[in-house]
Image (cartoon, rainbow, N blue to C red; front, side):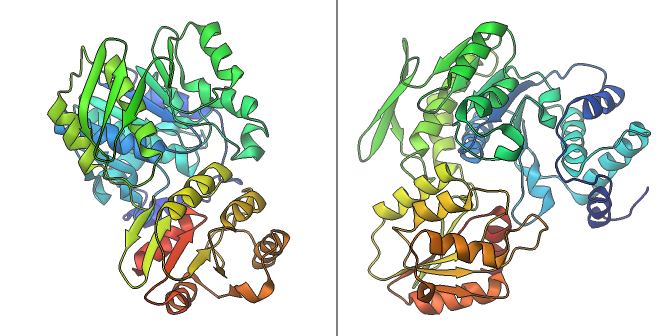
Length: 420
């Protein structure tokens, strides 16, 4: 084997390409055909979108598992351990299994260069095919059309929301981004759009390729009370559903779209009411409005684009806080920092900023300038050398009556979560 440990494999993969992101299906698709020329027999559900992918994947995984199916789940990025990306029957893939898959991929690729993400995608697919699964859930890493997971034809495609993010790669309008997300659709196979204001590019692409597209509010809907909610799609109805354990007013939108996905595969993967109820209550996604500790409570949220920041701001507004809200904050330099800061400025009293351990990180001066452009006074901005120092000072500053909100990046939330 080329390397003995998972860390060695991952460090080596990062050196193979001059850029961390290299979109396109030709290279990764060619290697996959060498590794596994036969079609995948499990049902495949591919999830794309700007926000809500992680929650939607968690709902799908937990409902299908509770209904007795063997489920493989591939997500990215991870918060603490690389193994989080690849789940088989709810268990993280072991280091040895991932290393073994990497070795097969390395041998089969020949001279074809692969990125870190492409290695991971192929490893997940290889492990899933060995596991004799009923269903495979694939989360798109970036965009959809040219993302590595799109080498597999989805039986059902779910697009959660479309907003401005990854604009250097996907375009700077919802229409151009929508076209990229819609690339996971397939002719004759159903797709679900969970968000509001579906872009024309999504509708047009579905028409052009002959993809049956189901829209929230038109083809399926839900209503809720303080204790339960109901879902309907044509003659199909589900009553007296429990509110999801996942926090946030938008989680019912995600859950409703997931039920529509399951409606499309009910002939092959039927789920009963108990499976739905159990999955809604057991679904968890670390780092998505996750509350840790008390006095002060620390809220972890990976919100790193304007739409996610709006959702986080709304959730914080719905949550009572007697003291100050202190942010532990940092972002990647290729994100819309100004819009995220402007959105959060009304719910954050003090800002503790720190650098991230990646070359894509925004510099401290860039973060300070963005905060000041939003009208935040220098006296409310504190700079720290790392996440640990920023978190410790934020907890002291917030005190028992306040709260700490760590947000802005998976890198940041992963680091803070590890400290907690």
